[in-house]
Image (cartoon, rainbow, N blue to C red):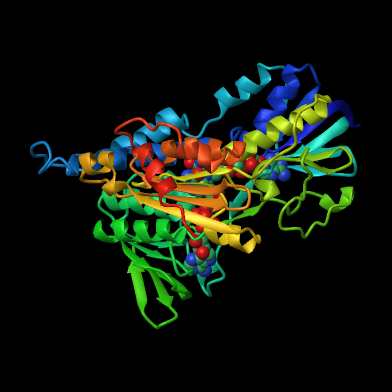
Length: 453
Ligand SMILES: Cc1cc2nc3c(=O)[nH]c(=O)nc-3n(C[C@H](O)[C@H](O)[C@H](O)COP(=O)(O)OP(=O)(O)OC[C@H]3O[C@@H](n4cnc5c(N)ncnc54)[C@H](O)[C@@H]3O)c2cc1C
Ligand SMILES: NC(=O)c1ccc[n+]([C@@H]2O[C@H](COP(=O)([O-])OP(=O)(O)OC[C@H]3O[C@@H](n4cnc5c(N)ncnc54)[C@H](O)[C@@H]3O)[C@@H](O)[C@H]2O)c1
């Protein structure tokens, strides 16, 4: 017999965990179901361990920059401390006891298992039935989307999960996809000694960001020894005793010990019983309104909504959904200033629209750019100073609608630009304020001065 509760949360990644915890703390009777690990992708196979790898790779790169600047160094990379740190500190050997306890400590009830909708307000988890009085929250996240390359489904390629749990760098690595996953990991493994080739189908890296950012990164990675193949389509994938072989449309075949699939992600919606609640079971993403409602008594948060696949977006949406379920007033979701940071070196930060997106949306646009190496701080920094600021202005309103910040602290510099876009600070006012000398963010002042048609 089904048990009556207030809310059932399906999927306990960062999005689900936030809604479930918040509602349980508010005194609701919450059941949360998770098929794998509470915390989801971010703490076990994504944000946190990848940034631990990046921290280690950045240390190696900085040490290699010492000659000519501060003495001499000999760098002997060792991946073992990185793998150990991910196993012991980040993931507790991929055990979620701490996360489960954190949630149940807030008063929620936890069920391990794969959940399925069985009608409005009804959820089944491995034979247990629940009826939710207030609603059901879908927070089932996303999974890697394999590229449609013949032969790929027959070969044991790596996804982000394999790359993150690797205990040694492969001698050579083919990375399919030059987006955030592909480039962050390509740079890390290069710094630990792997010979890396990135194969990207579009004509540039980081195709969601400004072209200048992708071009700069292609240059930096190329100088570090990464082979970057943009505008390249793989036509066949094979695997044998010598490793992987990937044939490109020009007929060339690339070989490597490992192949990392980094061609995007797909929302986890199949097998969820969406048809029982009137939602198209074939949908690629879950459509939600600004209060994250997907239907009567049904909410969706995080990657499953397909809005922007970031932890901060999942948590932002989760807070709004929790408020809506509790009947608390508050603004709906606003995606005008979604910040994005790719944690390569240099970091690539972006917020709002790119120039192309702004023009496509019909705005009259002006842009301004500044090169970080030409700024005082960039010049002082010298080695490793690659970067740029690019601003996109809506001329009619005199406000920024998008900005890019590439540089040694590109993700941190982005914050001021995000405030400017979100709060619609007039460009004229941004021009007449002070920028601390000699910071990296002072290049924003030069980019503002450069704004023109
Ligand atoms: C390599 C990598 C690095 C990244 N780095 C960053 C970063 O630095 N910063 C950033 O903001 N974002 C980053 N991201 C993106 C970030 O990881 C995701 O946006 C975030 O994890 C989404 O959270 P979520 O709760 O929506 O989904 P998920 O984390 O995917 O969690 C969904 C959960 O639902 C469970 N589930 C699915 N179906 C069911 C079911 N039927 N029943 C029960 N449970 C179910 C899954 O097991 C999973 O645990 C990165 C992603 C990758 C792949
Ligand atoms: N630092 C971060 O915040 C961070 C880091 C990693 C991932 N993420 C999130 O995870 C999501 C998934 O990352 P991702 O890098 O897998 O996806 P992505 O969509 O960012 O990039 C995928 C890339 O693969 C390319 N591609 C697609 N099909 C291809 C093919 N057949 N051959 C070659 N290239 C192909 C695309 O053109 C694109 O450039 C991102 O959208 C991002 O939101 C965030």
